[in-house]
Image 1: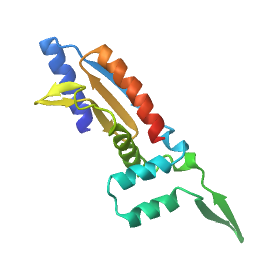
Image 2 (image 1 turned 180 degrees about the vertical axis):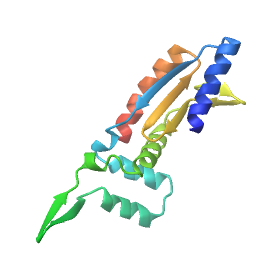
Image 3 (image 1 turned 120 degrees about the vertical axis):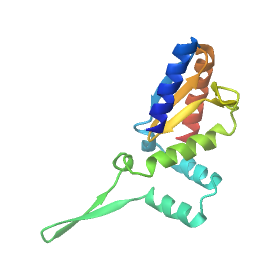
Image 4 (image 1 turned 60 degrees about the vertical axis):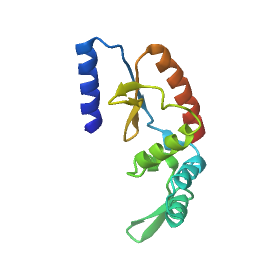
Length: 152
């Protein structure tokens, strides 16, 4: 909700002062249908306790569940797309993107707000890129594409 308010205020101020801006909405619906190895690297880089990292690694590989129908028990393998809606998925997306973004210099990109450059807002599996020009946005989108491929 805070991101929606921030975007509304940014748009309002840009209109009021006639400042150029570009916003691009990116939705990572199936981001966790790819390999999780870089996500685990991102969690390690974020200095998450190794015990939790190991637990997460186990959760992301060879996951199954059991369903009992009357007297018969069935083992069902849980695929990657079934896990995509997990509550931890947005946190993993954020960690993976931040990990991949370390090699790119986004601090100078974005829109100036209170002396800092705002270049993206993240909420669940969606990202809103913020830029003060379409040329900068194009470059940022190309970099985000490269970053996303690293994070996936």
